[in-house]
Image 1: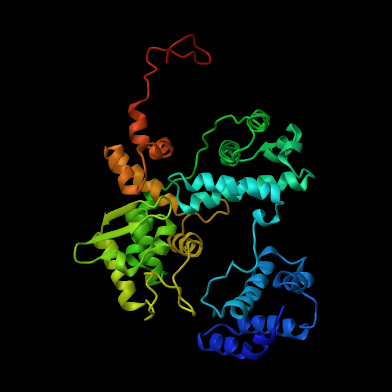
Image 2: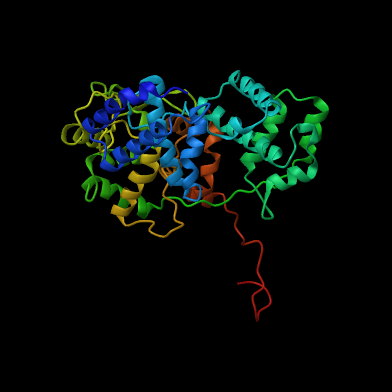
Length: 410
């Protein structure tokens, strides 16, 4: 591992970060990484992975967020040294390989590679494939950690231990992904069958989830209209969520060119399913976006519509929208202030679906408006369609009740 290039060019990295307006704390962290590497350049590290292990040693008892930040700063230095890449506000995950897959032995990696190849042949988005691969690799890693280096060594007790957590079953999605892995990973038929029948059975349950009430929706709408306590950016993002129910990942990836001002349209390709989605640019949405562009958006060349509030100015991430921005909106509206109250962006998709259902909009139209691939996707929203559910209620007039102290009747 040669650090000569880093020694000669480290000042270029630090000067660039200073010019881009990175914080003093960030500069100090990166300087600390450089000093660590150069002060121990005679160590017999085989790779930057070995150097990172030693660098993180004093912080092993720290919180997950602290360790993540340490790795991110370290990666920034390595990316500059190996690829000449200057920081752009996002971590470079090519360097320090993360995730369960990289901890698997060759036998398990082969199964995951085969599973991934099968998934790529289906009509699935990249994000869905990553989800399936990550969860399948996580399950195999648990087998490996229990001392089983091959699937043939796995027994029923191992599957029970993995799919039960403190006596409670894990999520149905987790089990469904494992069953799909058994089907698509090209396992020996007898092995796949044995693992399938050993996998714990789930009783299908439909849990009630929090939804936006009519009163809450009106308060949020008024808060977004006045903009009190919100930046122009956060107000525009909230207005998009409220009127279009776009997924947070699609709002994060929204580009300036996706707004067709002449025809009053928003045109994108959805991240989740790679399907095109076109919606009218309503007056509230268009005005909120225009105000943001004219009054607050930094004058940068980044094609993304929504830009971070601080240097280096880059497109916002999904986490920024679903976390920071939504919290600001609900805080400004003084809604859902309890610890366990739901505040996710999916609330707006649920709300818009309910509004359309209450007005008798057909399922196909609702699915197209939300960017779903089929009408079956709206089924989870039906449990809060109270207007139409009441019409399905049966009269109890034919079934007299016995009341305390009486015989029958009301």
